[in-house]
Image (tube, rainbow, N blue to C red; front, side, top):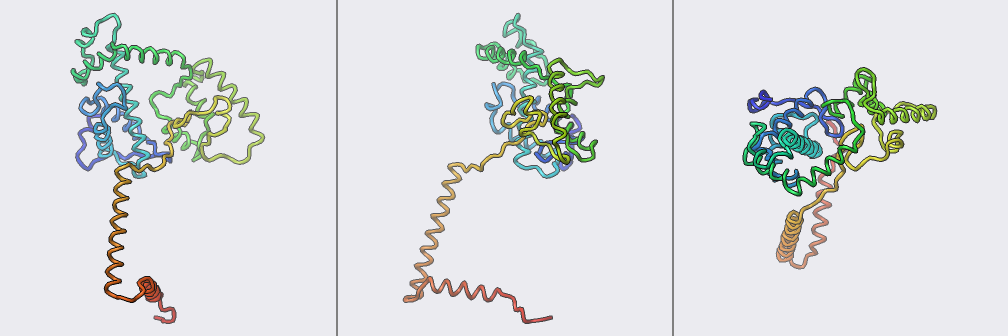
Length: 319
């Protein structure tokens, strides 16, 4: 990642985006790796915050600015893609802290013993001390146990490695000459190893059921889908509905958000409106004083009609 960090001002890496604003193509991997490098820089992404929500906004915005300076997005970046990038920063930051925990935390050692062993030279010692203290705290122990139990229950593993779903879907679509894969294809592909074996017994049962229902529904299909549809598809019938913001075998999908106006913005708009009303009142008063006895409304209407007539082209003239 040194080459990305050392790029001259004005140099950038071009990254394609899919219709959901998610990075795809060869340079999507470069972007992902750089995000991993970025969150490991203690000056940009301090590790002594319990959660991403507690991370000060100034750090998040600075990292986003760095990404926008070093990567050019096609189509141009918008707020949807920015939210996607923030989500990636969050995921990589959490993974970084988890990696440190796996390397350093040892329940047989005291907090001070773990602090004394700095496992990575990219870590700020002061931030590391705070992080280790949280690991040994009652709250940290409770969260760790909850996460451990959740991981033990998770059996739906894949074998796609570090490749992102949007990139895999894009590659599959190109191989199929523009035809998007459905979720059944993606599930089978990401649960089948290179030697043809399935990752585990649960995935094998799911694939068997998906193939069965897909075969039964094949005779009632007409035409070919040229896009990914996931609501009420066979996959959702077998695996159940998806959670908001994340669609299995599709990835994270941006939520549609209603535009919100802050209190300060609303107050500013209200003040502007009052100012315009005051100016209009003063103007009307001036006109009435300037032309006493005249009907101001009729004057305004006459002026508008005159403007409309002047604006009509002379259809009778010729060149």
